[in-house]
Image 1 (cartoon, rainbow, N blue to C red):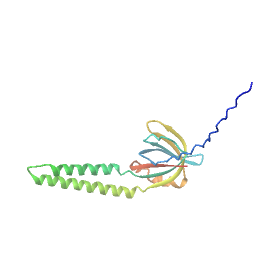
Image 2: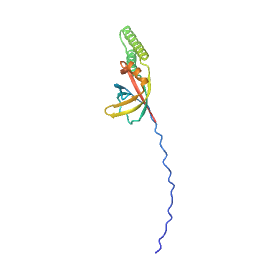
Image 3: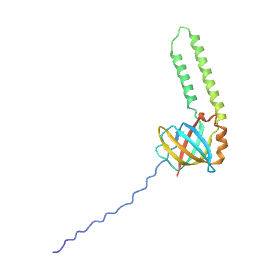
Image 4: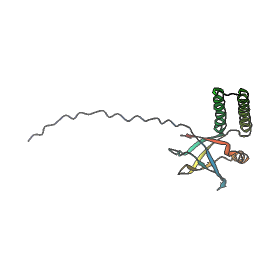
Length: 170
């Protein structure tokens, strides 16, 4: 018996194109839990208030003044001013007095924000992730360079005014 040979068509198999993954900076509030030296390496333990979707081994970190609370207060005062301007009142001088008070409050908040910005310089460094735990937030233990420890120690009383930006390094 003769077997019929069928010509098998060879299809060209194209290799899959690697997909570039865009790594976006993650910005979040944080809590500095601990700063300690262990085994001659400085470690910084943070609780980041957002759940990090993915962990990388090395991050560039930027700590900077969180201006949101100030901006929200200013926006609130400006909204009140707009409402007062639209409101019809029997005694217009009371309305102008209230508007003047709110404008003074805005100036006070802007002044407070500027003073705090002078006291809270940006802190930038690159670090290595030692340990990470996902929970309501993300607990991270970072190995940090010695050069940044003194700055963090000086700013420890003002660290609650800071916000954190994490950029993964590949």
